[in-house]
Amino acid sequence: MNTQRTGIFSDQLHKKILSATSIVAFTGAGISAESGVPTFRGDEGLWKKFKPEELANFDAFMRNPDLVWEWYSYRKQIISKIQPNPGHYALAALERLVPQCAVITQNVDNLHRRAGSTTVYELHGNIERNYCIGCGRQFANQDIGQFNRAPRCPCGGLIRPDVVWFGEMLPEDQWNASERAAETADVFLAIGTSAVVYPAASLPVIAKRSGAYVVEINLEYTELSRTADEVLLGKSGDILPQLVSECFQNQ
Ligand code: OAD
Image (tube, rainbow, N blue to C red; front, side):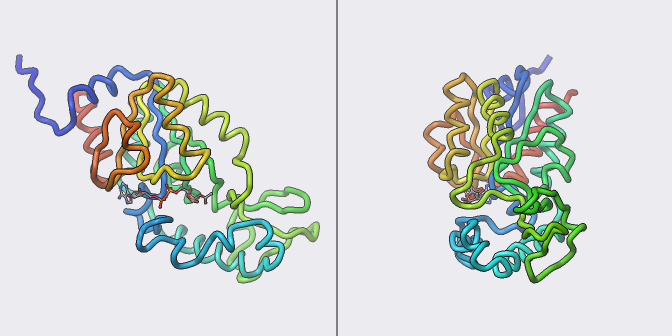
């Protein structure tokens, strides 16, 4: 029997993935870049065009709700027109192949769920949801339509997007679940994140300390590369489908 592999990934990575009971994928803006969502810190980054530090915070919203809402309407429009890419679909497939598989995402674009992942922890919220700052009532995007002005709840309160703004805490339930998943992961994949925004960026370190095999997938080396057991340089939309099909080709 010929046991020699012809794939591109290391034997060690194959073994770790095939023997894993729990795999966690921790994703950042890079995984959605191939769907057409601009990343935050690249040359085409949203930061450069729109200075979100000035817009994505509660004080700015209270000072000028219409301006902040208009910026989010623009982002909502971009996101409503795009589709998940092969990287998102590969993670959804992985969930069906591994006993436990969770996605922890810093993205607000909902593309993991749209691709079929079901265990998704959203650390920075979800741009498809909104809520009233007065009474807390939730509104889906389709419930409020395309507004250039900040919409109001029937109670009179302003409606804001359900995303985490500068200076705000992460949603506690999503953080706690993410921390638990990182602590119990056998393999931790950090995908398309510059790993500079805390506390999210501490998750790969928590996973490593707890014994996970940490694999980084990125176009370039990052702050995380020193912590990772392996760095796979390239597009997540290429690497993830290859990794899943190569590891599980006989299943
Ligand atoms: P960044 O824009 O900081 O980083 C994106 C990373 O993806 C970079 O390291 C790129 O090299 C990499 N990348 C780009 N295209 C890629 C591709 N096709 N395949 C693989 N990697 C690719 O975005 P995040 O790390 O997600 O927070 O930023 C983290 C947080 O910073 C965001 O969630 C946001 C921001 O402050 C909030 O809004 C609260």
